[in-house]
Amino acid sequence: TVTLNKLSNGKINVFFIGRISPNKGHKGIIYTAYYYKLLFGNNIRFIISGGLDPKLDKYYNKLKGLIYQLGIGDIIEFTGRVSFSELKSYYSGSHIFLLLSEHEGFCIPILESQYFKLPIIAYGTSAVKETIGENQLVYDVLDYETISSAIYTLSGNSEMKSYLVREGYENFLKYEKDNLKDKFLSYLKELE
Picture: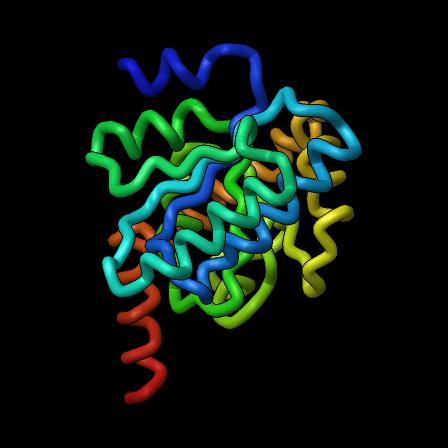
């Protein structure tokens, strides 16, 4: 597809999907991109997908202004809302999923990333730690220099990437229908 071709130009692709909203951590992604470029160069692309509520135009314009101010427009791309096939291409063509939301519920993109065998770097707020599972790269503090260094390290370390992917996929499997059904039935039996 066109999207996959665009993603296969040798750059590190860091992906995030979530509506454009203040709690979704877009500023964190922008500051991480800034530190990455400062420390490691611009052979990277931060891809941010998700719809925009017209009521949040001012917020989106502030984000664009911050990107311009930091001089990182060459490494950040907002795609807007994407089709299902484009979403699959972004998951398949990316190297890392970056989740820096300040508040998340269950967070389906975590499981989507794990299904597509995409390693995740996450900020461990709200339900993120429970959804993402054990043995994943989760930070309790938003230190953008550290997170950008983790992206750099993970992108060049196939052993670490394989470990996170394997553990993440194991976590994903816990949410398959049959496994959930078995857990639910065992809980019901405990109530008897």
